Image (cartoon, rainbow, N blue to C red; front, side):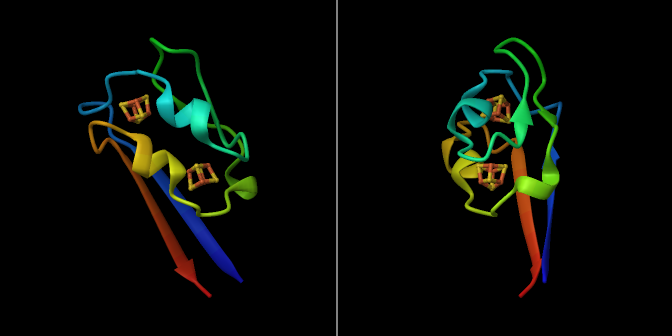
Length: 66
Ligand code: SF4
Ligand code: SF4
């Protein structure tokens, strides 16, 4: 069983919405111009697509366990 935590740093995030758009699991919500919210953490697959797309290193995904 693994658990995931996601943190969005509001000081770094420029609210571009890329992480919301590219999350295949629809974990994140928020329109461009808004700080994304972690809406459905339980659906997160830990794929890091959000992290990979974030141009500002504002989103952190930590996968614990196995
Ligand atoms: S790690 Fe993958 S599934 Fe989880 S929030 Fe990021 S893009 Fe979505
Ligand atoms: S991709 Fe990064 S900068 Fe853009 S909204 Fe998501 S966390 Fe913020």
